[in-house]
Structures are given as C-alpha cells and as structure tokens.
Figure 1 (cartoon, rainbow, N blue to C red):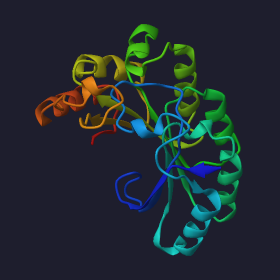
Figure 2: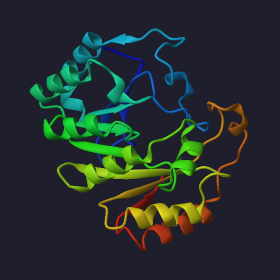
Figure 3: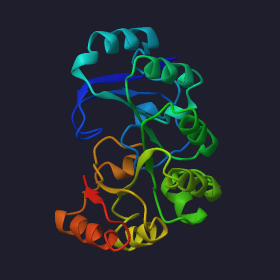
Figure 4: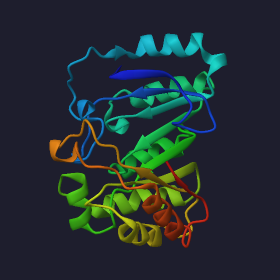
Length: 231
C-alpha cells in the first residue's frame, strides 16, 4: 500500500483531536467541483509514500498525535487498507475514515471489524439518482449511498455526514432535503466550497457562498439534526 501524501499535523480534520492526515489515491466518483483532483486517479505526478515510511513516522510521533485521518480520493479503494488499519489498531492509534459512501459493504466491514473509530461520510446531493449523479460526475446507484447512511445511523461507530455547498448545485433548498432525509442523525457538517484547483476547471473561478447564506443553511438543517456545524 502507498499513500499519495501526508499532513503531519492537523487540527481541523478530526476536531478537537490533533491528527496526522494521510491521503490515498484513486476515487470511484468524479465530482466536477472536487478540490483534490490530483488524487482522483491511481497514478499522479508526485512520488507516493510507502506504508512502511508512514508507519515509522507514526510510531516515532505517537505521543504527539491523537490519531490518524484517512482521506483521498476514496480510501476504501486501497487493496492494502485493512492490513494498515489492523496495524493502527495494534498500535492503539485511533482512525478517522473519510468516505464517499459508495462502497457500503466496505464501510460495514470496517465498522464490524472495529478498525475505525470515526467515519465522516459525504452526502453530496439530495437522495435522488439524477441529482446525485450530477453532483458526483458519474451514474450513481443511489441505493448504495442510502445503504451506507443506514449503516452509520445504526450507531456502531461515531460518525458525521457532510455536505459541501457548491454554488449552482447545492444551496439551502437542497440542504433542507438532505437534512430531512438524515433527520435524527448524530452530526451534520456543512462545508463551504472552495474554488481554485478543481477537477472541472469551470468550477475553479466560482465564488463560495457568503457567510450569511451558510448560516441560513445551518439554521434550516437544525430543524432536523441537533448537532450541525459549518466549516
């Protein structure tokens, strides 16, 4: 197993924890507004880091971090992920998994084997195949997304759902529909879109919503979910 990159210290990926964030390469979605386009394919322009190098770093710095955050890309695509997670468990290093939820059986397996301590799942659009496919850039079997949502809502692991408010795709109307479906969930995070380097260059110059619009979406989401946060 290889990693595409490492952020040795992060205070924002699993608050209030101080974590090391590890980036994996490869994704089964093609969200046009994706802000990590270099990680979409399984090959990239930068040299990957072997898992042994990552494990060595974590062992040397264990007393300075509270855990690791696995993000991507889609980490669940990595064939050696389970072995890595088992090593983290052996070393008593908590793991947060970021996932798009399109591999529900993999999500379930990681939880049932007690390999992850926290799961953050993106919910990219209202739960209709057409809208979700537009937001994801590929044809979506919406049942897979719904299955992952139900798995997390069983409460066997701490979790959050996340939606990025992308101008032109997601605003407070879509947030209300998503939050309505997620009603009663443990935690819902609304993320502000960032322009710049995006998979589809047409999104690179789009300005994010003003703070007032994000707060309006937050207030709407609170009608359905008690714990809502804007990032």
